[in-house]
Image 1 (cartoon, rainbow over the protein chains, first blue to last red):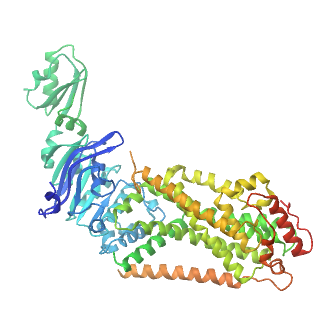
Image 2 (image 1 turned 90 degrees about the vertical axis):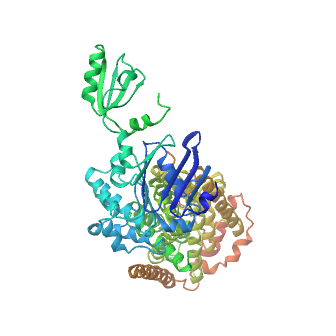
Image 3 (image 1 turned 120 degrees about the vertical axis):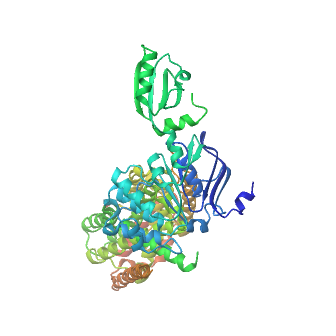
Length: 300
Length: 257
Length: 81
């Protein structure tokens, strides 16, 4: 077990092994394994509360490891040498609002042994025109770009992006994606947004209730969330429609039958034909949570 | 981290924290103006006795304490709580910034604001109320007043470690204003009754004020050592309270949700 | 890098200037002209003569009264406020 961390494998920059973490009686991570390989952008995807931020904070050394082991660059994640080689964009609601963009960047640059030039950081984050503006006067998207610049200040080998575009409008989100995409850096991206991993990640792991439930390329993961979710109260059983074309999965949840399908029109026609007393029919996009539930065995 | 770089980080952290606070009118105006305006009113205008009366001299020392107390409590108490809640502390913790740089920047900022208030008070006292002190007394008074940053910053730290950012300013005010009043910073302690005077013995600002008054020979007559020991003991207690607060919140700055 | 150095320079010189101004102000403050000053007539040591117990605040009053009787030649009204 120990050998895994101490080192032969140069290509793994960071690793969580069998990590379990509680907040009081709440289980946040449940034996999670994760490794970040050099050069990749690893997406950590999961619904809110799945444990993504806990995993990131463990990798950043912000939380004490309770069970399992965590290493970054083969060292303790909180070690100074580790902090000097990585950058992080966290869910932070604000930094010094009375300092200008440039001043905030200058401050963070001073923390690192070999920081990128302030001018370069400003241009990488598209902030040249805003360098003299106070952080508190920026829009949400502009603020996130500043946080992005701060994460890059130390010219990191490993970058952590924790929900980088949460709360941004579509334009601001795409702009930040473009900036992240131009980097050539190993990164861990946590998000609940499928489109985000699709745009940025090379590899994705999906976590739910603190456990890893899937692992693959964005395209593979995305297929789980394809199609529409049809829900209704009917006497038709899941097994009767699983063979229909387009159906990805079908199950009973509470009083409802839930079917994920790529051909919702066919399915609905079928269901109505089978059961005239069908009520409470809805058809909606498959959200990530539903897609993930289909991957877990414990779903009701 | 090399020494050269360490000095740079400490310096820039203090530089930018100071600028940040200076540009915050909700902090800098009350913290600078309150002691000066109060002193002008209670110490100078309400003093009908002419220029060499002791009241302006007495109140110079106590408003000096008031002027040191404000920035120390607000910068540490409210500043720390807010920065923890917004997540800045957490973010800085992930960088190579030494934790000491953050705290020393807070202390430096409180010192600079404190020194500004003290020198302004000195000028007002000297040139509007005719207060004259020996040179060594001016220096000693300034020194004693500035040294108050240490216990008051740890008090602020203890508050900041426990309260939420949103309520921090209100809670700091609830401690700052009554303590100033009850320690005899606004009006001399000896006009209060026995009970109130005895109560004041538990307040750090009372002991600090007594040390400042000692310099000009107007203190209540308790030994210097008593005040120093009480202040040192309270500083120690505040640090423990702060440490417990940080532990409760899961370390330096993690938010639990 | 150059800019950071400038920043350090500005920061250090600002800090240094602040200290100089602070000390400068104290150096220009007035000192008591002989005989008239309250602090000059009464040596600091005289206050220690009065026995003050820690918890007795009445003695504070007495102490202060006596202090200023000695100083100014008239009773100091300690209940001005």
